[in-house]
Structure formats: structure tokens, C-alpha cells
Image: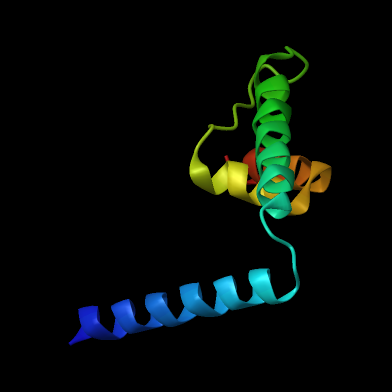
Length: 88
């Protein structure tokens, strides 16, 4: 039962997302912009990890951290640094 509800929500949200993308005539240009943000997010985390400025802080490169930095940009890197320093 739960799988069917989850599958229904997934199909509905994917179809609405496609409707929004093609209705606004965005085409595939958003994909290159998203890819650029994704690469810059990974590069920003990589620079923080291996710059040597903060030797005891390491932010793992995983989908959650890269996603946060992709959405938030440079403040996302600062947020992850702040969380890492205060929580660990």
C-alpha cells in the first residue's frame, strides 16, 4: 500500500515538473545551468577540504552536501562549515 502511494506521488510530481519545464519554454537550457552549478558546488567543497586553511574540518562529497551547495551556492559551503564546526 505504501509503495503504491509513494509511486503515485513520484509519478505525479515528475509529470508536473515536466509540464512546468516545457510550458515555460525552458527546453534543455536549464540542464546545462544545473550541471554548471553542480560542478561548481563540488569544486567549492573540494577547495575547502584540500586548501589546508582548516585542517580539522572535512566536508564529505556526497549527494546531500553537493545538493545543499548547488541550491544555496557559496553560503551553502559556509553553512556546511558552520555545521561541521559546531556539531563535531
